[in-house]
Image (cartoon, rainbow, N blue to C red; front, side):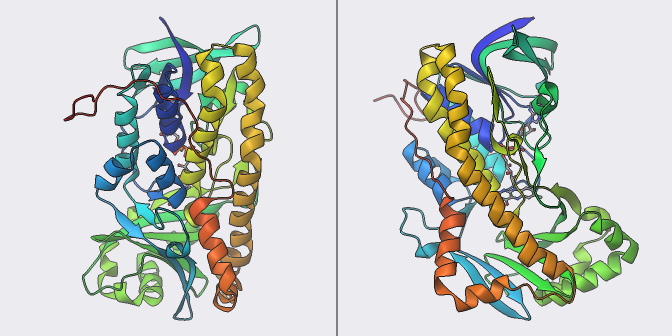
Length: 414
Ligand SMILES: Cc1cc2nc3c(=O)[nH]c(=O)nc-3n(C[C@H](O)[C@H](O)[C@H](O)COP(=O)(O)OP(=O)(O)OC[C@H]3O[C@@H](n4cnc5c(N)ncnc54)[C@H](O)[C@@H]3O)c2cc1C
């Protein structure tokens, strides 16, 4: 069976879903393939940064976004030797939304996909996995995919691979990203929150060669435990009681409920790696988001960068796609990387520096990472970090045309 569309987006994460919306909103036919049945994945980045909030504002989605249950977090802190230092304070930024909003990523992606579905050119195919690319005379001309009804070909003018850090499309076309720095193991778990707990926002606690991150989700603490690659094997060897003791020592207000970690199997492990492709495109094919440049959780850059990539892609390609000008589409693919590469390289450089001068020193036991002290002594460092985390290095703005949409449910078209 063969289907046709103008753009096939592989992957319905932040990059793919946002690109699908922006292209459909511009009147371009777009199919987003998502291999899972829905957007429900635990412990995906739930951070929506000031720059992404601004984009939601620009496309008229901010009010509906803010109606979702969310929390506003204005500070990111580090506690070392019992002293807290705020390394970022978004309330210092002169922007319309000077905070980070925490929203379960599935709610955010559901909202984006629901908005996209108002445009006649948009189609989201869930439980549909891209397996390989199709080629016409060497040019990528679509994908082979497997959905609930079996395998089929989806032919398109352009394929955008937004299929994340383990990209199938990357493997299919034989490109490999360059690893930047060393990988980390990050384990996530939850602990209940009590009203008497401190108001912490996001706080990273360092001591005794351990790092615990605590994000206040109002009814629970989303906890993370960072360690070197393979470090969780050592945690397993030391056993559950040792892990609970470390947690109680570093986050004393949780000492009365460390038993909630009932087994080390409660830890959900994710590998955090930083890598990037040297070339983001081939004729008929473009990589964006983590498929082009995997981000680690440090500073929660990944979701914002993925959304910014989508905006830059739509800005550069919507018009040539509307004109069905294949030569212009192919010639603009390099421009997407050119526009985004400095922002990506600087963000990854910052993640790597944080790992080198913060995380590695902290994990090495005796080490006292110098980074928190720098923020204590240098006022502008906090402002700069707030800007860099909140807005990124090159904030994008939506410049795509707008086609007619179906009315929002519960309203009538003006
Ligand atoms: C442990 C950890 C914690 C993190 N925490 C944060 C955080 O708090 N804040 C933050 O901003 N960033 C965080 N990040 C980074 C962030 O998750 C990524 O940078 C971001 O999700 C990238 O978005 P994306 O759309 O490019 O890719 P993804 O979010 O990975 O989305 C890719 C999508 O493609 C789908 N897919 C994959 N293969 C196929 C296929 N063959 N066919 C169809 N669909 C496919 C997947 O199911 C997925 O839905 C974290 C990363 C890690 C490792």
